[in-house]
Length: 187
Image (cartoon, rainbow, N blue to C red):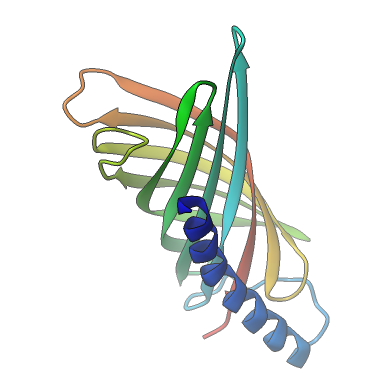
């Protein structure tokens, strides 16, 4: 039941933005250059599916991450969002978790696409998945492939560190990639 709630919440964040972007795009020209000017707002998100197998032990994770952002100057975006996680491993009950995150990205024009680099911080409240609260910091990078003047496909990766509350050690993690859709709205 929890996974259906997570999916419904994510779709509730993503679908209105896609519909608005399509409506605005129908009124504009057919250009494929998205706007990264000051005041432009971004609504979208990403999803990952991680499959791991080692020593006969299998696990998989689904992560849905809706987010919203605003460009504070040309090419510089600040953003925030949530990540909703569903985790399942062999012989272990499925668990869910979430995090609250925020960060910044800088976009480089690589006509016709946009390259971005940035960072984010995240807070992971105590949940079934983590067992204790945690804090994380990630470096991220990726590319936006414009599909229209207001919508772009987002392909990226993260590298970060996770520190569990009260634990002496931290966990370094790498997400080999994520796929997302970003919608951009001019002020």
